[in-house]
Length: 108
Image (spheres, rainbow, N blue to C red):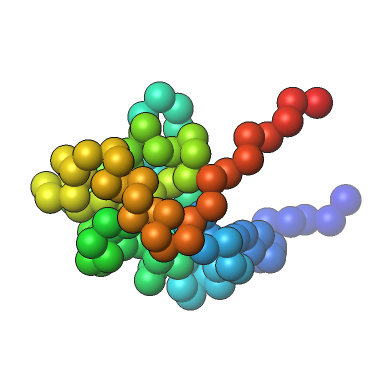
């Protein structure tokens, strides 16, 4: 049995939760959130921006809208300004940006 202590393993490269493109380790941002369940999303640093106004976000100063999460996936908003805007305004902006409604995963 080989000793694996100190051996580097190739980490998994994943896709961005926002744009779906491959996230290289140098451009990776991991956002953790706890709402009704726990999830971790890998994102491009440049994709972590407000889905309504487009401003860059900072950890701790943003919020996910749970009402839109099931249909559009993780979308963050400025916690003091855009987060309080009506759902209809947020959904209209997502449609304007060309974001498609996610198809529910089929249970096997």
